[in-house]
Image (cartoon, rainbow, N blue to C red; front, side):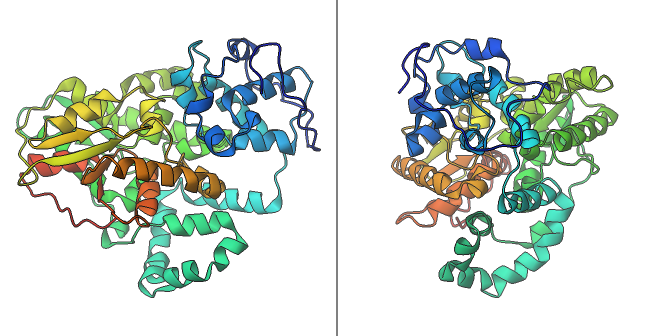
Length: 457
């Protein structure tokens, strides 16, 4: 295993590929690569290395590989692509690195290179086509809600899972099916008004991003977020023409799709003329704050992207910054032990950790408990749990056990992907606890409503 700058893996990947190396369109920057001193501090924080145990599936190993491809010592082969694909993009290594290596920028540069210059197998292409043709489009997701509702209600879902046939046909499709939350009446609705006035004196005019999965499967979280913002003096603008934030395609190297979605989002919220753009999903928020990178080559949108990014705030970041102005009430009759689950793109990507905890502690009766390995990814990582279900499942089991070992009676989670992953693996535990978004908990407290602890997992 490499331990210094001079050491290197014994053999580079040599499988055949479409291209010999990276093309000239923003390959990983050699200066960023050279910042890595190969100390190994990243290894224990890396979820793929924790599960797979191979050097080339660690940040340090991938940086070696990037350098080798840049210098022509290794090809951009099928094996190379596999090592890059194994990265969850959780960015824990950027937090742990004592040298300040910008691994986030390196892997963001590599993903589009792989998509442009490596030909995937037909099954891989079909699964990715399904994912990127469906999940970034809320109207398409909502159109699927009807058939999926019948699929669940008629018991077909239980039959499919019991037989295991789908897993044999396609592990990725089986992972999608197992992650599907219960389809409810709210999944068919999109009824938040475009303008919600502030309660009392207006302090800010904020635009609210609805998300895609969040908009269809967690609409109650969006409704709670809008009420919390309104109750704390915000006029909330919710443009209905908004689309996907571009997180899913951006994280998987689908550059053209990500750029088109980012332009649409900028157009939409520029027209809204808001003080801030607020988002309640961690993965979406990280991508919204990266628009200046996504559109760096677009002369029309480059400066507009910079201005947009300056307005983006995670909702917990925003509320901690401006302060709560409305009274909070207990949501249980006694003490309420909560474990807060750090979403990677909030903790590592946006460096937001204290703010959610500060807000939750303001609810009377709440006691926060901290899990071990809090910074380790749950395995969701956008669509990683669909593309790499085995690795994701092992990480999901680790995460849920660590959360339950705190003895908390509920989990607070700030990202829809994390929530789906945790709920899936919670269902198989001897003791399962409900999961809520922190905005839901604040909403219950502001409205003086009891917490529905019977909420299904």
